[in-house]
Length: 384
Ligand SMILES: *Cc1c(COP(=O)(O)O)cnc(C)c1O
Image (cartoon, rainbow, N blue to C red):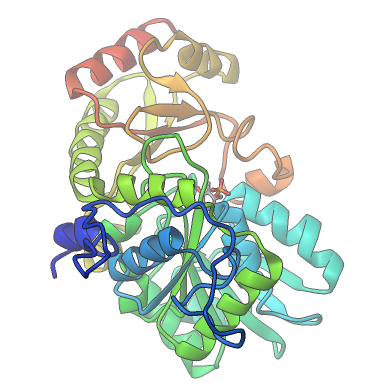
């Protein structure tokens, strides 16, 4: 089945068996526990809703298909999914992460997991060769985001995964920025894909959710065990919300990208704009790799203005249609200032080291009419 068809149908198959209701949309199963005929085995396959729930299972089946994976697990947030993946490790293990990893992920690594004896190295690498110098004898996991947040750096996922596979290191790709519509890391050799489904997959700013997707059965069993043991599962109602969002994921992604390209064109020509970061720009250092490993460049754009910090803030506060807000990948355009919002938890000297300047602005281009978006940016830029 092709992506757009699967997005609508997988997990939503109507039950036309005798006694089934034929719903074309999966029902929200609120039951916390499931009755059984025999004491020793669950009759209908479900026992207790933390361990398994029909609505969540429908979503998990759908998510696996979106990523060309065999197993998917839904969690109560992106960070809950990331936590469960980190719990695959044990005391003394070392993780190499890209340096401009999502701020909340870095906070989780450093402020939570370091206390439990995990070691982290944050490094800039785009290929397997560049990664190698950061590996140690106890390196057990490599953490990637491509495109990264907020600098939209591109990593050659296939090349990095060739190195991690040869050294039996688990590779994880946070695919939130690309969405499975534009990039499928498992096909490129990743062992685990995680998403904040709060962003493109959900798409409507009305649900916080996360997932992990894998191909390997042994790995799937360990994550399933952790999902139940830790308990940070996605609720039936939220699972339904995400499933609903996914149906329009292909359409939304096409529009996000179409609009982003026009915004990039506009910003690149504007005299008050110093630099535009977008992997679809031929001048972007990761352009050729992005073209090879993604089927589209996505809807995220970052830029710097020819302006002081206070003027940049004034620009943001002058916008009328585009909301100044954290989050991304949703139907409404959102704009933010990483240094004081999403990446405020990253120390200033760390931010400077990775090239995240105080003047950087990140725009999640929504699916509104492009004329209204450009008009808003134009009037905002005129105020500074
Ligand atoms: C938002 C985000 C997360 C965290 O997800 P939540 O759903 O907010 O917990 C992780 N990674 C990336 C790239 C994100 O953008």
